[in-house]
Length: 243
Image (cartoon, rainbow, N blue to C red; front, side, top):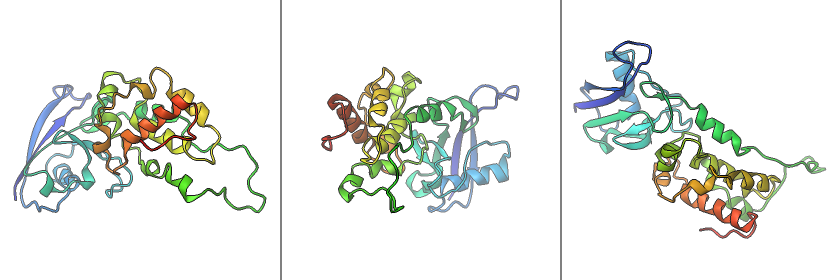
């Protein structure tokens, strides 16, 4: 089948292309099971080598090819043509500065990520037998969902609160904090809850629910944010019931 791509282009280094504009490309012999990323490769390799996009693993693991496809944040490597039709609009994810074409500056996103202490904290001596720190299956289940995050930024850049205020830490950072806040082996839950109770923390979430359907790993993002809010109100993650 034949498909038409309408791609938002931008190149700040070239006169005449230093403002966003739309460009169309037509591809023939497209199969229903072709992925959007494969066809973007064809456009770049066969029609316009200046097209700029990020991609790496091409298997939905690295999260580098996040973009808006027909108005929805998706990973281009996971979207099949049979699910989007013959006319596809592609543009960069929103809320982050565009560097070129489909490539955005991820540094503001990762700055928020780093701010929530996204690492394990435990100052107790390790077990004497040299084994890992153990926990029950029930305790693991409390944060199992949020371990799936691949930092693609799909959830954060689908959030109107983030579009309105780039200082908002965003859903992805809160998901990363949730993973450690509810880990019974970690000892820095209070510090993370204090960070997220700040003006640009979790309370800027307006429960719009854009984040959950945007997640390519099917993380229940809105629920995780609700659990963090409840933990702040209780002053501790202990006793928080799944919302």
